[in-house]
Amino acid sequence: MEPVGIGGAFGWFAAGSTRRAVLLCGTFGFEQHSARRGWRDLAEAIAAGGASVLRFDYPGEGDSEGDVVALGTALGTIRRSVRFLREVAGAEEVVLVGLRLGGTLAALVAAEEGVERLVLLAPFARGRAYLREMEIQSRLIDIGPDGAPLPKDPGHLSVGGFSLEPDFRRDVATLDLRLCEQAPAPRILLLGPDPGGLAARYAAQGSRVETGDLPGLSALLGGTLTTRMPEPSRSRILDFVGGGPRPLPAPRMRPAPPGAAISGEGWREEPALFGGGLFGIGCRPDGDARRPAVLFVNMGANDHTGYGRQATTLARALAREGVPSLRMDLRGIGESADRPDGESPFYRLDAVEDVRAAVDWLARPRGWGEGKGESKGAGQGASHGAGHGAGKGSDGPEARPVIVFGTCNGAYLAFHALCRDDRIAAGILVNLYCFDWELTHGGVAYGEDTLPVRHASAYAAMVLWGSTWRRILTGVTPVRAIAARLLHRGIRKLAALPGRWRRGTRSLSIAARVAQLRARGARVVLAYSAGDLGLIDLKTQLGSRERAAELLGEPVHVVPESDHTFTVRPAQELILGELLRLAQACDVPSPAAAETTRPAPPPAPSPVPSLAA
Image (cartoon, rainbow, N blue to C red; front, side, top):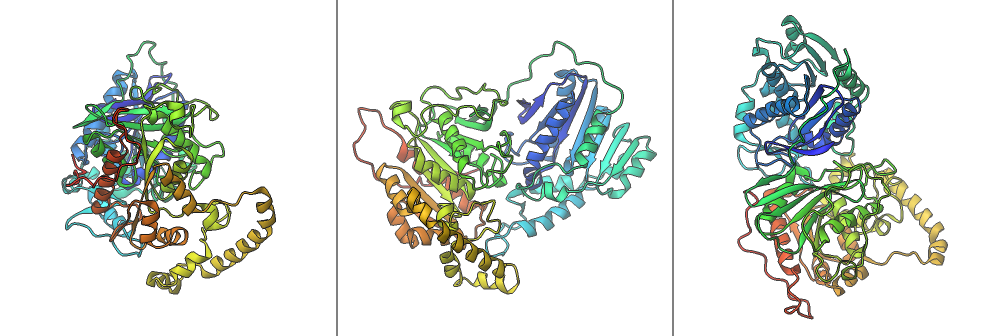
């Protein structure tokens, strides 16, 4: 599948060998963010069957243009996409596949566009039912570290950091598929609950309707760590989409699809393919870009757009201030290829090489986006480029300085990339769970330590927290399991000590690594939400917040009333201000004006530019 632009919507298109084409209409916000990887896999499986396939981000979501989602714009994008498949792919049969609210919209468009088949995956018959469910999800998901609801503006509704604007909610509330007098398609497959008796209604209107269960839907929509389309639902969809008489072969000569560049006020974005299977979105200013560039590393298993779309929002705000960026997907996440082991890169130290491959792409001194034509299907063993960690020796004195930004797992990989690659001039690490898994967890790999269990000193410090006792008394914290794991870990560490000393593999302390970073001129800014568990590891490794700031030579921020993912506006404004400050501080002057000493950090820009366009 190749990146493509559809009237301001960013998407992925694969030209098929037949005149049947499939359009995937995803759902919205947190649900689609969670389902992205499974949605991509479904599209590729359909394409493998010979049909042309198109999937996209609605304007205001993902990598598409716009800051807010509008119902009319979303419906217009589905209509344009159907016409794209007819005109560009030469499709004579069009199939719409809609997920949740995307299924509701697909049903509305299907009748007016004359599609042949329609797949509805747990759709909503009424928009009000969707809004009620989102209100429930908001109360379950948007909570702080202590379990209290996050502060929100009056009348504001967000789910997992994704906002549902008042105009969108008002328009969605008017939707009702039961009022449609015409069946949306001759053949319909409805999987999951049948809201409002749609199957019987469509059958009475003349459609051939098939129904079935949709097991595993909650796992697909409920988070990014489990993002595969559930079986046997996947097979049922593939059989329905590919079944029936064999369609005619596709026309031999078709115009090339339009480019995938997306632009807005002050910024322009293009897809980046690099590192033998890695994907990212490069965002640059309209005019000349400042030399430092920002690299956004995945938080957990969230794709490159970020939780609550924050990476996309920050990247475009930076571009309006002259700072280019790349938001990337590690292997196994979002649009990048799978890892060789088929696992998630969550706290896998070998994923640092993916980060360094992105630094290769960003650090090039010549033009923007060199190598963007690299095949996404390149082998897993492809080179990430020459000169890892060589700094000026590999890229020359004109190499672009890079600033890495990451949250949670992204902060962990960013820290280790900072320690390994001299081309990275600075980093902002948000809610860093631990600096080094070995130091915190005694050498236990993430896959083996599934709780996961922290260092004993961390639990000693947490005894002073009131929230800890609430979790123990309510049974949320598995005290016995943690104690057993700590004992098991201690035995393993004692048994491994002789071999570790013989091999000389004892980890360098975090304080020593910080000193090395500071000696080479690298800058590290830490930020935490109040009460985040990462503060325990900070104290264990570097001491108090004041002591840590002294060792780093940079601030350690603690943001009150923020969630782990920093989705609240004050936290995002803080990050934007710090990124702009570091971009200014890391800018390399001309050789004639270069100083031999490290300049003092400039003050943060005031006022901080708005995240909104």
